Image 1: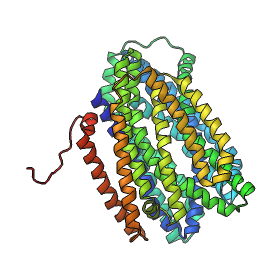
Image 2: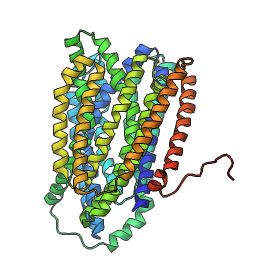
Image 3: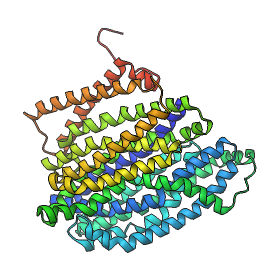
Image 4: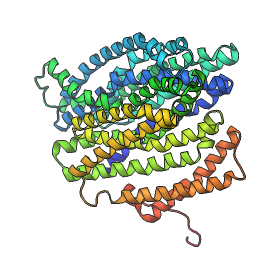
Length: 535
């Protein structure tokens, strides 16, 4: 069981993390080609104004269905009903083509209204950037269904590698198109942004090619499962879609949660700051870039650590829930949370300590931008906890619980948004999100603990938290002392400083985990560290 979870985690982390790392590394040359700091901030705001509604519509059309397929396929395979898995998959593909086309049409229609409320100066420019994303919305849902089918078969490799391949081609297209427009044609950064948003379509096509090639490689194995399967159950098409909807709708809602919160910020922030505090539209656009558009590129990588772990455990938890193996469920949940915290906490806290350097490497140097990035990184812990805990309860079939708590969370976000943003500006918008996610995550964890965990299964968690807080405090104080005499002022020195400083404290973190025995408890082996005087 542990080997399956770790293997699945590896492939999910390969795709999710590396693709997201590519998704932020390209920003360095991309923004340099865009031009001045003001143009860079504007480009980021326009790109984010297009990408957030695209991601929301994509979530509405995609998020729940592949996960529902993964869960159903895992259950059918556990009953030797692989033919039923294939049957459901075929109809699901047709349905996803329909939902993708519908979502694309809706995004095209509502683009002007979304652009008007977004924190950008030009509504016309933002409208065009949003509409450029429509073709991708049409072709991505069927592809995500293919990934869900593999996930349900506990085969995480195609999901992880296809994500990486998709992102690589997308990034290459963005950089190539931007180089041609800005440095060869000496064109407008607005045109470069439009081509950069269209790159999602090129990346999706590349992912399709990989998945088709992989399916040919695995065809022999699936033919064997198909021949060994019991006959297809007599299920009407209506029954198939009813089952898919029953599984998918809660996943759609919960899977869209973080994007829904970001969309709330996009639609409300400019109005609050301009109408209530007196900022002009350009100031609001820059502030939105600092607290949302820029940090989201970094925090997405941190949260992807959690997504990689939580999604890879979904088929295992679904199977265990079917067998009513309560104690084994508790052990799997405990390992899930331990792995999540081991990667989440050092990633978010160390990057927050290095916020000046990290912000300067990817974006123009700015003290306000660095402070907002640090705050966003710390608050991303709440988003990651939400992702993990809600995935766990949904994997166990507790959809109503997840939907109920998330509904309360969105209501709380809306209630806090105006007063906190008015009082604290960008920090207030981030705080409204954090408070909401943290409260509902703790509520769901309470339900998990009550029904599935037994005494002793979470014994390592408190030690993991203490070790992370100790390392973060030492890193913060050390960085503060160094900043009194030296502060990086260009991208190269900022990168080198962050790499060396971060590397030292990561090694310290691993040493403390090793010394405390946590590393061996979680991973099953101990790291061999060279110690002076021992051979």
